[in-house]
Image (tube, rainbow, N blue to C red; front, side):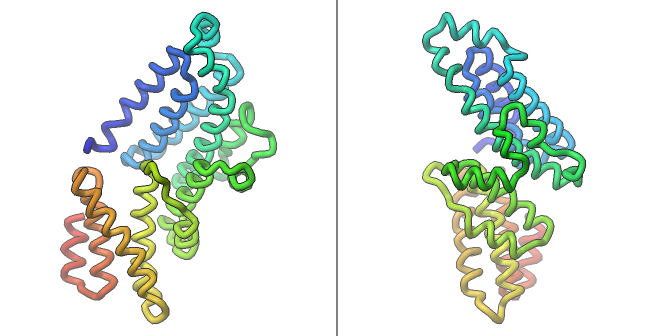
Length: 262
């Protein structure tokens, strides 16, 4: 029920605390989640860009042993910490892959993706064959890394919607598969899938609107439930979906009311 914004500082502290006890894997999961939360919390994109870059630099530095050498020293004297440290190389690579894709999303939103390549910054940790997001997508498909695959699909859905590439947004939404344990991006996926569906319900009203109304209705139903559990986080998104629904069926007065409230 807490606002998404409230988790940002907590994730930063969690990252530092976990590093100090040698749990590098969970530390960088917290850091990556912080990068993601900053976007959803509406924090200035330039600040998110800097944090993503800082996270990547820290991951690479830890991977190379440049910083936090006390982690390895602690591991040699602590049997509980040692297994965590010996398993961190894969975790760092996995985290870097996800963080690089998310960082690319931020760069595209602010128009800096032509001058910055987050995959180049991560080359100290990543497989040399992964030079861009398309390479990462192929890696995720071939290795069955569903978390990375879902992250890329959400990022592409998000960008496609905001840049009005609705056909691509619908394609990414269809490929996305919700998981048994729902992370935050699954909720945002449902939101953007619903918005995309109502767009097509209007634009393709003479073709097959029923399909799009069903998809949009599914998102509406989910947000009615989620808004009851966290009004702060989800009620405005529910209102926007309702506005899009009324707009799509031609009830303009109700749509205008919902748009205003959202």
